[in-house]
Length: 429
Image (cartoon, rainbow, N blue to C red; front, top):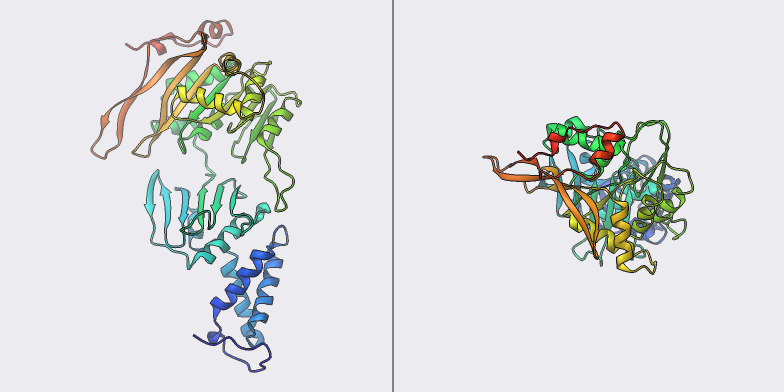
């Protein structure tokens, strides 16, 4: 290994004799203590690179120094080996488990790639290059980051000692070409009849929760449901990371903001839900309810903001109700559980449950109506259920979405409003 040259030496050395890892360690220490954050990210990082080369003490010719500085800058200001995946529309997830293990999800299937980062520091450089446009930085004082890319993709990163095996990155891609209802039907996620039923429910201003497990397609379905909202209504959308794309004329989009590097300026989803009530909305669409904002959303549904839509992480319709109860308790309001359940039973009309199956497919598993209360229990009826009948030769799920034979309690109200349903839809014969 070549020895580090003394700063006081005037002897010019060859570029190939420079120990790049020593220079990178100097840069790593500098960006970890004084991170280049914000609009001047690139210029500040270039200054750090130049300073590190000076501190290393290599006496290079002007041409070699410029070439070396550009080479080092390209290394520390890049996504690293995962950069090639950002332009592939078929890749929905990128997962880095330390420098030696990179997974991707492509067409719903997990794949272990043969790509690797050089070391932990290389991963750290990539993380900070990814999240810097949002004014974020990860270092020994801030070891966990949850943010998004400029295209809307979500990014989560953790570093040691939180992740002992090395820095980890999880990126959920934001697909530019969103799936339409027709494409969801073609994929088997739902049927044309169910799509028509949901469109009528949205037009009728029913309060709907789209529920499902991770990566089950909740946001995709929610985005399609918003297309059925009449154009003359004023819609306020609230999201942690902007993903919804509404075509209506009168739309106000609000997005939560994390705290900046100094810990200031945070705006939560709950702040935005409360603020939305003062914006004269006809509809409130919350991208995802995750915490205390659940109680504010339920109260909005109960106070004249019919037709509200949101998503919730859960595995079954009954789990969805339990999750809403738990999140409402997180609000800090001193409400008894019975009162919260009454709020839920009064506010919600439909739970549209999605599931991601072992074969990677995503489809509706239930459509359930929230009927009311019996004692201290919220009552529901399943209107439609997916029934698996087996698997084919390619291990793909085989089954069909069937009606349970029960008609929704609001069907007559839809008829009166001129939104007529074919009642044969609810027959299980």
